[in-house]
Length: 179
Image (cartoon, rainbow, N blue to C red; front, side, top):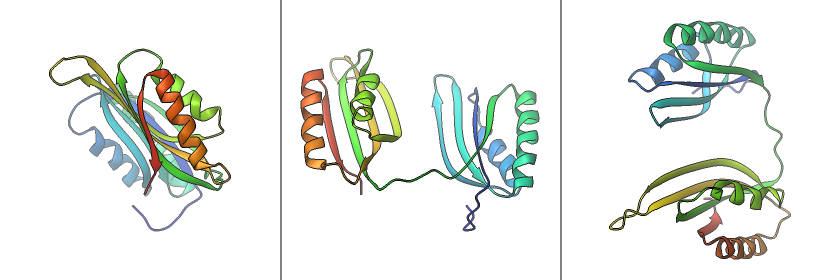
């Protein structure tokens, strides 16, 4: 990761059949173009490996990456999206973490996301997984979120509203200050 900050930025998203070496290949493409991986999320989902990366560097390097990525992905049977972007407009907000655990059923993510969007709260990161509960094998759903709570919102009131929401939805949820 470079210490030099650049306003030239692109987001790449790729998905392909999971196999060893995908991360090496994709990050080598970035490196060979003289770019830096600024932020990334990578995960195996089913039998596929998904990558989401924010890369920064020279305009020429980003143009080269767009060409090289398209060629590499076509050769390897990987789907990709390349998009130029800008720095994010940041508002005064405090990071909070949210966890939710419940018996797995459709709609949990939608209802929790709606709870926060209705209050003007942005979701910065969201992770889910489902697994059988110990001893019973009941399918359990886990949700972890990082949110940006606007500085002018009352955090205590938000926590109370979230607790009431979780009780109403039969969810085991917590909300706390990210640290």
